[in-house]
Image 1 (cartoon, rainbow over the protein chains, first blue to last red):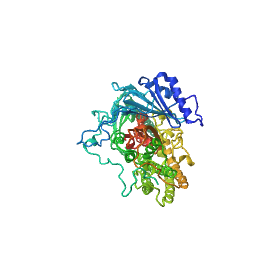
Image 2: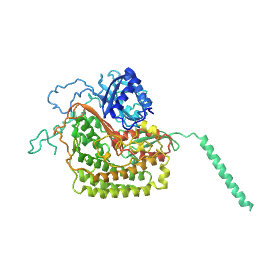
Image 3: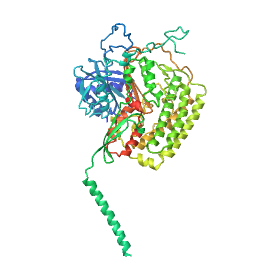
Image 4: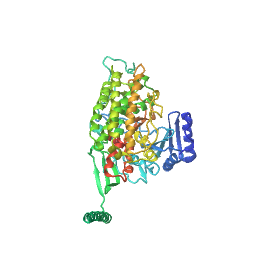
Length: 217
Length: 393
């Protein structure tokens, strides 16, 4: 696949920097942002219009032949917190500023996919902003056939559309189900109807006075 | 005698005529397609998976698994749990190899916190990880027989898996859901006598593998029902994200235990990654058999070299994971299992993407079942090996 054969002793960061450089050559201005953690992982963010193109470049030109997963992230802080509020009290003030993670972003919803090269086992996390008004990108199925079910799942859980997907039926939920459960503004109803007993995670040990440092030997 | 001769002739003629009319019937009659529904409750589905297959005669023209009967929404639930609480949930994803589910999540949290478990904890983690693999895959080997109509192997598998479960229970307190892994190490050290007992059990498991190999893999019926059936070529396997034994059976030499740097003990010992060039059902089953054997050898070697020291690093009592994103995946019994953890510096994860092996492994079913015969549906599904909890999460 890739013309540059895997060399055993390339330090991780050079290899990963090269991935970003190669992507920039192929995608140009559509590559919006990137982050390389040396020896760990690489994140890139592409424009929504270049989502399919990014997949094609990664698979056909850069040798990322293994499709790992495709999903999304909703960066809106949950308006319900952890569902541990006292229902009799007025709801507490919450910080609702949207802060995206690695490789930045502008929108609340972001696609996230990971592809890996089967020759040197290095992966790339590809992100893509999808607009709130029209959350839709081109499907990756022609590039990675395995994206089919992942896109169905993402459509069901986040309400992101995939143009060109043959069959965006729900995988888990009933067909008539309304809402997208993994969006942060979708309440976890089990927490709403019954208070959660596990609010206190760590109870003080009987007789133990150390609160901060404890479990070590 | 001419009469006998003519009788033979007549018989022969009648036979030929029957053949010809049979052929005519088959040509002239329009056969209607039929839809075959397998499951959701079917012994071959390891839980509740429904397969809808459209048939033309005995051949499948279209097949589609329908999942979701066991969807528990773990990705949403992790968002309202603290990090230590999450392990209790993710234990139940692949319920036959529970401990192995905990490890990648804990490693991801440790990666974000910038801590590493002490060497002893890493070794014990690796031992328990491999024991989960043995418990899981040995059951697959027994179950495989049942799918093909052989009942004996499953009894042997349940008998010998029990020894491994006893070991896991002895070390962790839980037979199926250990919930033993902690951020920074392990809940406890190994119990007294664990090492000697494990050596005995590993010997038993190697005997089990030999038995299964003689009984099942050498069997002519088994071979004729699996060889050349359900062939998945390399590039298709990679595109669909097949992992674990399914990928190695298609000739891809890739094992996450060997091919990435993890704070685990696999790189400190000597072991082999098995691959098979055929990509058929037989190859997938054979790889798994070899992997159980290899795992017993891994455990034996690990037992020899467990370093001394604490099993828990210094971690704060209340665990807050710094802001960031981390991806860690490990080679679980079913294949690549990974967690993409997004942290906002709070007590619990902001978002967890659970990448489970069976979801990808089973998404190839519509592709691989096209054109196979009805009895092969079951063997192909069995050889792909999935756990329902691992598909639906």
